Length: 88
Picture 1 (cartoon, rainbow, N blue to C red):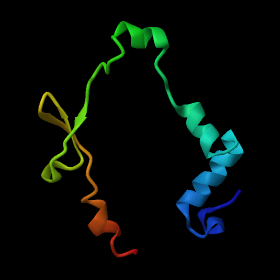
Picture 2: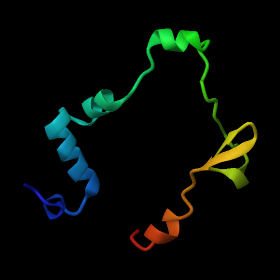
Picture 3: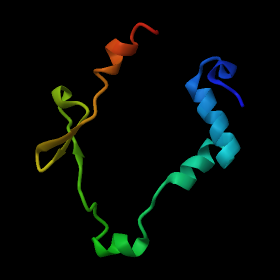
Picture 4: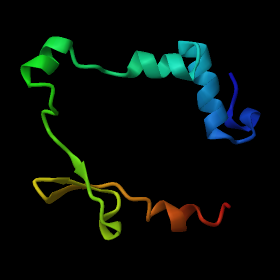
């Protein structure tokens, strides 16, 4: 069994190796793990999103997800930048 050191401490390379051995590659893993709604279900809701989500377009709200103009999710990268900034 390989350890992270065997991949030169590259998490991406390690993940790629695991996916290659378990699914036959990254593309096959993505295809196997992606969930698609049945066409009849999509037709029943009028080919629209059941829970419509609009990403905020204002720079000050970048990474925010709005529903009915209310913030429901804030997915920004502010935290990782200072934390991982010393690596690069």
